[in-house]
Image 1 (cartoon, rainbow, N blue to C red):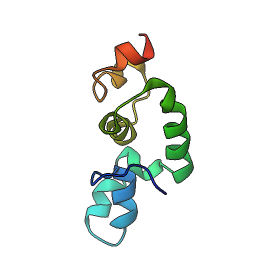
Image 2: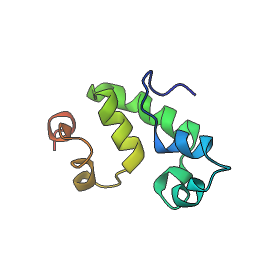
Image 3: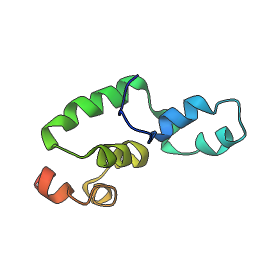
Length: 84
């Protein structure tokens, strides 16, 4: 899975990398443990219309906002992109 060509990783990628390390116990308690490659690919495809920066996409993947209010935190340009 190729998400971003950068040093930054999503929590999902970290979970997959650290499955055998103690940090895994913490990471499975956050939203990243429920993500799949397909979820991320679908999000990246659908988010192309909003012209989000790579860092904004990374934050949205990590935080997984489920309401319009929650998206304002990881994405400071959300009001402009999502016309909210």
